[in-house]
Every structure is written in C-alpha cells, then in structure tokens.
Image 1 (cartoon, rainbow, N blue to C red):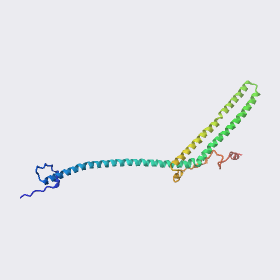
Image 2 (cartoon, helix red, strand yellow):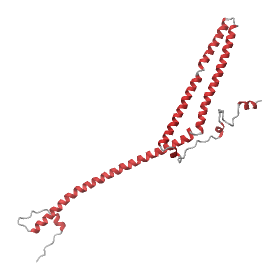
Image 3 (cartoon, rainbow, N blue to C red):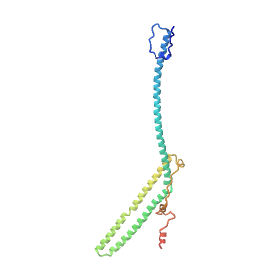
Image 4 (tube, one colour):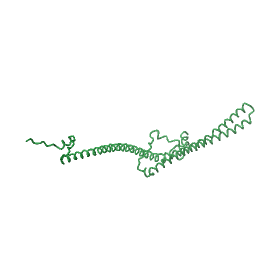
Length: 239
C-alpha cells in the first residue's frame, strides 16, 4: 500500500483557497477558519508597519531639524561670546581706561587753546584798528586814507571770522556728548549680560604699546603731563 505524503504547514497556507464542499467534515471547516484569521492578521499588520515606517521618517526629519537648530544656536553663542569680549575690551581699554581720559583732556585742551588764540587775535586786531584810526586822522592824501579804510575793513573781517572759536567749542561739545552716549550704551549692554561681574573673567585685549620713534611722539603736551620739555627749556638750549 502506497503511503500518503504529509503536507507541510507552509504549503497549506500558500495553496489557493478551495471552497469547502457542502456537508464537509468539521476538521476542514476549522482549517479554513484558521487561514481566514491569518489573512486578517496580515491585513492588520501591514498598516501598522506602514505607520511605523512613517513615524521613523518623521523622527529622522525632526533629528535633522534639531541638528540644524543646534548649529545655529552654536553660532549665536559664539557671536554672543565675541560680543561680550569686544564690550569688555572697549570698556576696560577704551572708555574706562587712560586712553579715554587722555581723549577728554585733549578735547579740553583744544577748547582752551582756541579760546586763548582767539583772544590774542582779537586783541591784536583791536590795537591795529586803533592805530589805523590814529593814522587816518593825520593823513591828507585821499589815496592814503583809502588804504587805511581798507585796513579797517580787513580788521572787521578778522572779527567776523573769529567766531570759529565758538563753533569749534560747540562741535567739540557734540563729540564729547557722543562719546558719553556710547559709554552709556556700553554700560547698558553690560547690565543686560549680567553686570560688570559677568565680565571679570573675560580676557581683554590690551592696547599695543608704541615702540621706537613712535614711543617718543607724546605731544602736544597737556598741562598735567610730566616729563615734557617746556618752551623755556628749549629756548635755554640756544642761549
């Protein structure tokens, strides 16, 4: 008698469905129900796999966006750090250092120097005007009197142009106010970053010291400067 070949489960699953004959056995009906349930499970698994794949793609996209955001935040942090460094350098070596004090004194010296020079010019012009009047009174020639009148007209022109001293003072005052405004803004920015204490650990850049002949060029001398030769000292060298 020939033995019946046993069918494996995978072969049974892959075979096309065959309609169960009417009046079939209970075993055939059970086998058909199992295959139906398996197909239903497959139908449920496929959408879940698709959703999982979409979620993974979405997570990858979010990771890429997060990396871009991190790179941009790193650039912002570097910019903030560099800004704090520049503010600290400007605060220490510029508006709070000896250089800023020197600038203020230089501007004051400009105002004082122009004021003194203007007073000297006006005084000399007044003397010339008086002498011209005296000279004109003793002249008989019309030509000579006309020449004296020209001199007096030029003296008036000198008086008119000496208002440069007032204009210079006004412009210098604007410069000082601008420097003060910048200084105040620097202080405000330092307060935004946590005040002066947050800058104390920042290494600032120092101003390069002049060397060679440049180190000898310290003029013009200010009144409080020490170590400078006065005009009397220079005159004494030639006497």
